[in-house]
Length: 87
Image (cartoon, rainbow, N blue to C red; front, side, top):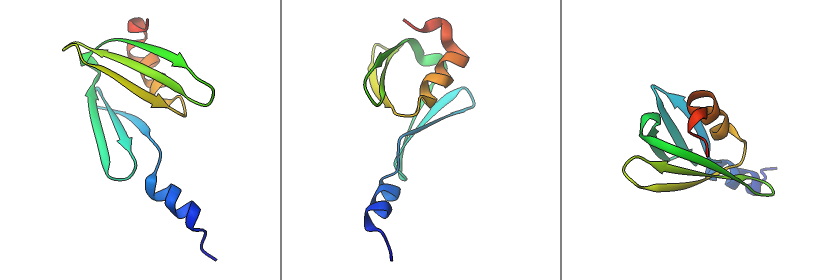
């Protein structure tokens, strides 16, 4: 029997982060993707929560991005590549 709840979760997908060519690819579900070049990140801060962390990115153009990191994969990418910019 097909479990519709599992299918809905699969279709929605989870946020995932991947480093490709010095840019973070933030996949949101199956169809949406945001690309943030690492060189554009001036500083970043982790705000721990109960089941996820909120990562605040301050970009060089002054924009601030608040991103939910459920699996700590974004934090791992940031600490490995630009750990010195963590505040």
